[in-house]
Length: 402
Image (cartoon, rainbow, N blue to C red; front, side, top):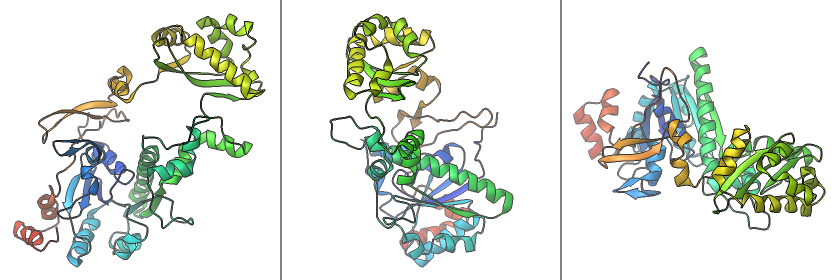
């Protein structure tokens, strides 16, 4: 087994902050890429103080910047730009999520950098995408969820809509940006020609909606929200959550062929037949019938513990799972067994902390996890690698270039 990750040897320079802008490079660092994060001298990434703080270590910054190297650099100075350009000559990838147009105005837009390195892969993340009427506006994860359809999809009938606390637009954008970078890297390695990749929060959230969005577009009506009985009158399926006798929720999903066998397995079918609710397709006749079916299911699932219901369904290869709280999710046996959560020793804290593991398992080049850097931690290392000696780096500090 190779101890180096699958992206070992790939060099990245990034001027990115927030979540969508940093997640692609954190994941690349996990996979062995050398990531240089450019930060403002003395200030750093403003998100160093976001989230939960533990002895000065930010849960937000740690999650999104682990394994990268920090170089402080004043990009408004000519010498700062020259240093960036030196780094670009040796880089495979450059990433930024500045306000639209800012990179071009400050001398590190794609047209500027490809003159220095024609094979550079240039990744640009924005809120609304580069071409629409809102292209120049700032935006956050809430914008992606709201415009991309996610908010409606997870709304509850009769309740006010709200964006979710999980940053699904940011995270999806990060992963989509990563996939674009890897595709462009492959092309650049094969041809010597780099390119610009542009991704956005709204585009990523819209893609996240998948077939549900396609169905809505084809039918030209909103999707079913809340507990779903979907499909058609003849081929109805259900995806819903129900509370057990202790109020603990479980999730189930059944297609039309599984509906009656599952109800028989759970001992529900006789009660449903007696009330004329055994035909799931009735939900397509009226909202009242749909609610009657769901209400009756709620009563019956409330008659035993969720572990009983889940085991009964899984024994018949039917889909059922506990609805985990976030703490429960971090301790879930499948999450833990697959290393989706792990513990690492943090040298600044002097203890082990729980962190995300990796969503991938590589048989030959496993991922490894670092910690987020201190501000400017790698200034000397990075600058000496591109030809500066210690005295020159000391002078750059005095001149407030780094």
